[in-house]
Amino acid sequence: MTITVNGETREVQKSALSAILDELGYADQAVATALNGEFVPAAQREVTSVHPGDRLEVVSPQQGG
Image (cartoon, rainbow, N blue to C red; front, side):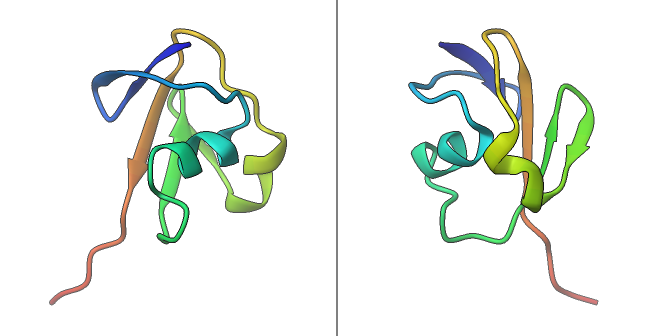
């Protein structure tokens, strides 16, 4: 299915948010996620479904001062 990830159109095979993150290479990273502008806690990613046309934002925390 086609979704938008961080502003770029991407094709993904999975529908669960956690599986999509794995598919996109974020499996071992600490990230924050928002689906269609709504924050999705890490504990909810397994049960959150993504649909064609959805917008996913994936943000990695930055360190610094």
